[in-house]
Image (cartoon, rainbow, N blue to C red; front, side, top):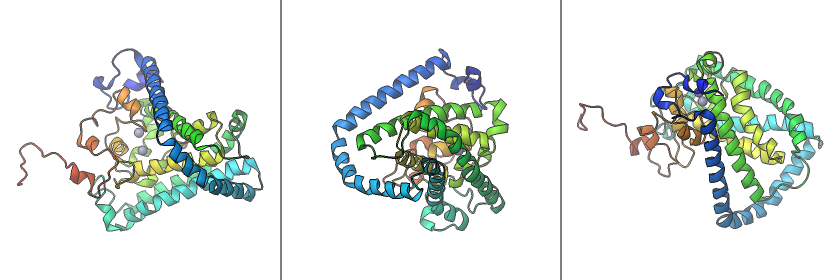
Length: 341
Ligand SMILES: [Zn+2]
Ligand SMILES: [Zn+2]
């Protein structure tokens, strides 16, 4: 990606431009920062909670191990079938399960308790039928055609790197390390591919479709054209397991987590105890900031403005209160308006 691509993003102002040094230096700094943080976090987790988690994982290891063997047998121990058909079925199942409640609420307005957690009040309540069906058609095409084609194309590289299907599941410690690497790779590749898609040369053709929803709903997470689906959604998520030579069962856990977090990010509801959707919802609302998943590269490249300091940023946390975050951090009063009004 070039500096031009960065600075020319729609609405990107001079103040959002990295201060000197260029993108290469910024990227090196970000990699150092991310890897440094990752190593320190790994050591901290390993020395504190890991022994307890390892015990829990050890107790459930047999369950997951035998579940995996059953699935593997179901596919006739055929690695290609497991990789392509298994991964496709798994992704579709996860997508349907994660989206079911949000979609029912978007269409029917029930359950009522969920509505109070709506991020953008009044938007898509109820969702427009025509828009919804158009979205469902694209989503079905992406999950049922583009995703399997990508999985087929990715099979050879994955085998070349040494991903495996047979044999024991890895230790909990190894899974923890793999997930850490997956997250870093996802952040880097999603952030930069997403910024490239916001370049004026590419935006209208490749990314505008995804931004038709300024108040997104869960299923819009994969509402996009085929190029964006591959470049920003599938590739960043699949690269980590390939590099780490992960067991496919571990990859499925990771893909499930990615689908879960992107569903929440687009869901339009800030539900207690779950990941916050505030940042990506804000990206859909204003277009020109917050391109990453973890927020690290946004901070580094200063693309977290104008989100930084806004009421939406204050609301951007995992809430452990049943009160909606918008009640905890209400919209600031407009000048000239008092509380009594
Ligand atoms: Zn975007
Ligand atoms: Zn989005």
